[in-house]
Image (tube, rainbow, N blue to C red; front, side, top):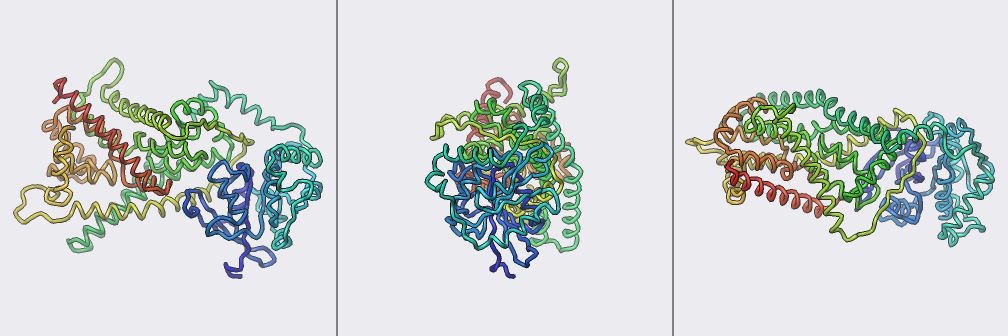
Length: 622
């Protein structure tokens, strides 16, 4: 059967019902991930063949608690189920997934979906977990009262969806009529929904207790204001260390592979523009993108595991009161923490924030976190200008580095607080979370989630990174230096000329033309500024480490302390890399937000550097 003859199956359900695990079980690796047209909501589609030979195209719709949409995710689900979403045909059959251990919450949404009058099957998932807790669900009674097929599923078992697949062929194409005792008009009334849910529960569900004993025991500790925050700090420390430490060997291997490939291509091709384009532009550009992938995957291993285990909503709950005072939400914590390694995975991690306003605020302040790419610049300037001496039991250079990290954090909180005061929507958006039962993440779901995120990262960011890197290569390479040139070749390039022109703007900050030139390739990656400065000062260095060692005495002799402090402050804010800009564009689907982020960050950088330099000069450091 061709793709055009496939039946469209929409999987719907409330968050934490196991819907995505069921989707993974049905479709396996036959999945495509994209965004819905015009929005940043993730679109997941897969395929499977039923034993009857019929082919199904399965759409995993965003989780929703109600068709009375309170978020963009719920609006997409509502419109797709009704067949009103632009460019998306109406589903032929809807499978509504509910959690057998939490029918009190999830049945309410199933009632709303049922009233759409579409062919529908109710999949009662996690039946194995329900049996372990002594929960008995009378599936026949549910089917009789709802008037639709009801089947049990266990999404973590290989044969856990056989009953569902067997039932689908008989349902597809059949029109379901809403029950008379609960009309579509009555569904608007929340009281009617709750009353019908209670009636169904009393008829079909026997539950010894509302929550599992193990959940209550763990929550007594993990949601405790003191012990819970301490436990969260340990988890976050592990994530922070893992993203830094575990990724390093793989990132070094990718970097070495990129260098080896560049050297091979450079030695194979004759010298000329094509050689430079391939080595310095395309290979270096792709390597600069792929090198972030280990950090992305390690970060999302933790995020997926925390989410699947049921712990992530509890972490958001613990931190919500603290974060809300700065105009963020508890869900913002993990994305901002991950931005210390790289802003790209941090911005991508904001997808866990359901409130669009809080998600946008987190995206805009994520670049203020001190990413690892800033460290080579910080190490260079601190080593050149800050003396190696003790301040009590602490090292002065270490204190300066710590102060730069703290400055980034405080700046992010200050910016989000200002955004909270200026935004039009002054209403408070309380954090409402379902605390699901604790579960052990299934390896299949973790691996599929990692594959999806890796592919999204490479596809969405790679093209823009490559194009802009080639553009930067062109600016740094042309026009070539004349035959009698005495200055570095970069001085004669378009980038060199731009650097000289920029001096008029950046002179009040203490920046010379060499610094201005280094800022241009620094847009591709912040750490490139070190090797760029080495090039400007006509130093040849085989690596960034060698460049740093050679630059230290030169900079300490030619720059003032005021200039060095000004540049340090500049790197706290402004020189975001183009991959961060590309990620903001892809995640917000808006050039306006890219412009806002770029404008306010460069504005803060200029103002902070100006104040730093002028005050330092007044104090005699100029």
